[in-house]
Structures are given as structure tokens and as C-alpha cells.
Amino acid sequence: MKKLIYFRSSILILTFLSAAVIYGSISFVNHNLFRTSALDLGVYNNAIYKYGHFKMATSAVYEEEARNLFSDHFDLLVPILSPLQYVLGNYTLLIVQILALLLGAYGLYLYIKPKGEWAAVASVVYFLSFYGVFGAVSYDYHSNVIAAAILPWFFVFVRDKKLVPALAIFSLILVSKENMALWMVFICAGMAIEFWKESKVRNLLILGSVFSAFYFILVLSVIIPAIAPTKEYFHFDFSVLGASPKEALVYIISHPFETLKSLFENHMGDPNGDGIKAETYWALCFASLPVLIRKPQFILMLIPILFQKMLNDNAYKWSIDVHYNIEFAPILAIGIFSVLGLVKRQAIRWSLLLIVCGLNIWSTSRILKSTYVYREDLKIQFQNEEHYRTHFDHEKVQEALKLIPEEASVSAHYPFVPHLAFRDEIYEFPILHEAKYIVFSKLFYPYPLSKDHFDSYTEELKISKDWDVVLDEEEITILKRAFKGEEQL
Picture 1 (cartoon, rainbow, N blue to C red):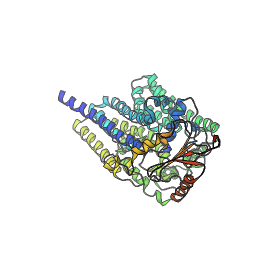
Picture 2: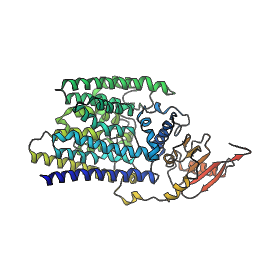
Picture 3: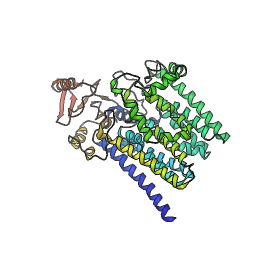
Picture 4: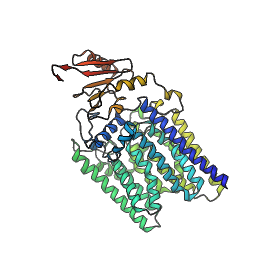
């Protein structure tokens, strides 16, 4: 028995250590090798800098006409995390994101443990190897990843009737991003069914569902419109449902079959979107989604995620890539292993645990190699030695960036923005405003310009009398605004 316990503990520890190393080798290597971007790590790094210095973050990083960043996403988690910048620097959010995933996996272990020690270990293996987790750590930082990661702790604290910590996790998830509130409407409703026999817990969860709905409506219809210059929510991109959340609700209720049909078909009609939804559904099937039929309350929890994902106007959001699948991870893990924990015959239960984990790992390994949509494979393929290499001297670039004063305003090419974001004024090139320095490289994509426009514009800047060339290397070019007389323009 002691040997079995030691073996089980060893697998658990090895799983956590392996996940930490792999996630770090994806996220930290990407940042070190300039594979992170202005959108989104650059924006959020600048935001934690601003909040940490008691200033309001704006969209100036990526928009000519700056607006309050809360009008883009009502995300209160970033200000909460901002003090960590003084310890962790521009890796702060990446480190927090990985730690949250590992912490969430441990919460999952504690929740499933009463259903069986091996089921709990298997749930951790499943969660940490889920394809959506790999996609999330490969693409910068997003607060919905933190929200999804800590969700298992909400289950733990609700089950254990620990109201204060449960309320704390509930609040953190609500304020992490406006759409997380809609998710919590369904999470609390599904959990109310799961804990139906415990009347006090059930009633509190129903109250939580109602409050989440109220908070969601308040943020979308009152708070964001009050902040946004256009007086409307910026991210309602669901033309198949209507022009507003209200129209969408009416359409879903009045056209249920058309809505369901749109979940599976290329409703935008763009040929580039063909097959993307099918790939995602296949990936979910290999992740053992059908097991949740035994506990449909967990399928209920996935409804807002599927609707937001599959009915969006952006076909890329239908895909299995980046952070658009992270919310599936905790629900699938909790639901599937809650079901498998009900299997009484030990041999059958162990076999099912192995099959589910095996299918999940196999599916993720296939997704790591290729997907139906375009992506930068080297950002996620930690198993590929090319992931750890660059086509340029990245150490030279890092040294070159030190030539820019910490307090100077900068217009920077998108891969440099996350590294230069800890300042009051940082813009994604070609936005200039009153920037004192410009930083760019012809070795990276010219986004958001075309290559011809990028090449001609940067050459014009280099020969312009308004700018002095500080450094002009193959890897990086740095320009400094020229002086005229006694004043710097």
C-alpha cells in the first residue's frame, strides 16, 4: 500500500513539475525571443505599469484615439495584479498566468479527491495536458485564463461550505472580464443542480447566478457605455444574432433552430472559415466531452462559452488555437472526472481514467503539430528545437533596447512593445504621436502595415531631418527625435 501511495504521489508531483517546465518553456521563451506582441501582452504590461503608479490605463498603445482601457474590457484583475510588477518586471503577467494554472490544477485535485485518489491524479494530468491550456500559455496573457484556472477552487469552497473564500473566488472571476460574469450565470446554475440536495448551498448558488446576470447587464449596459467614447460595448461581434445583446437574446429565443444551426456551420460564409468549427468539435470529442451526458449540468456550464465562441464574426475564434478554449478546461475536467468517480468497479474505472487521459494527451499532441487555421507553430511547439532559436541575434536586440531611456516615450514595432511597456507613453508603430524614440526591425512582420508600406515608411523616417539614427543594424533600428534649436520636437 505504501508503495502504491508513493507511486501515486510521484506521478502527481512529476505532472506538476513537468507542466511548470513546459509552460515556462513556451511562455517565457516566447517573451525572451520577442514572440510576444503589443496585442496583448504589451497592452497589459503597460496597464500594470500605469495602475501600479496610480494612473489610468488607456488604449493609446494600439489606437490613435486613446480611450479608457476599461471601455475595451472591463477587467479589474489587472489593477489587482499590478503591484507584482515591482518584483517580477515585464514577466509579471506570464508568471502569474502559469502559477494560476498550476494552482487551479491543485484545486481540481482537492475537488475530485473524495471521488477517488487515482481519479484526482488523472484529473490533474487531464487538465494540465488539455490543448486549451497550451494554447493559452503560448499567446501572451489574458485575464480569462486566470478566471478559468481558479474556478476549481470555487467548486472546492462551495462543496466545503466555506463562504468567505468561495465569495472571494466568485468575485475575482466576475471582475476578470465582463464575459466571465455571463459564464458565472451558468456556472452557478449548473452547480445549483449539482448540489441540489443541499438547500442552503443550492439557494446561495441560485442567488450567485442571479447576481452574475445583474452584474453582466450592469457592466454592458451602464458602466462600459458610460466610459466608452462611442457609448456602446466595443466587442459585440455577433451579427448572426443581431446588433446588440438585447437583439441577440430575442433572436436566440425566437429562432432557436437557426441559432443551433449556426453553432455548427460557417455562418459568415467566408471560405477561410470552412472546417474550423468541425476541428474544434472533434477536439472536444477526443477530450471526452460526450462523457458529460451523464451529468448535463456541466454541459449547461459550457453553453455561454460555445455560443460566444462559435457565433462570433471572427472565424479564428472558432478555432482550437490560443486562449479561446481555456474555459473548457476546468469544466471538462471537473465534470468528466466527477462522472468517472461514480463508476464502482475499480478495474473499469481505472481503464476509463487511462482512456480519457490517453485520448486527451494524444489529441493535444496532434494539435501541437498542426491545426486547421494558420498559427505561428514555433510559439507553441515546445518539443521542436527550433522553438528555442531565432533567425536573428536576440541578445543583441535586448542590449539595443537598453539604449532607450526608461522614461522616454516610444513608438515600437509590435514585438518590442511588451519589453518597453513600463513607461507612461508607449505606442505600437506606426503610431507616433509625440514619441521621442522609434524602434523597429525589418526581420519581423510589418503588421499592421503592408510590407511595401512598412519598408518605404521606415526608409523615409531614417533619412528624415526630424529623426536621428541611434542604431541601424540588421536586427533592429532605433531613431531618436532630432533637436531643433534649444527644444526637442
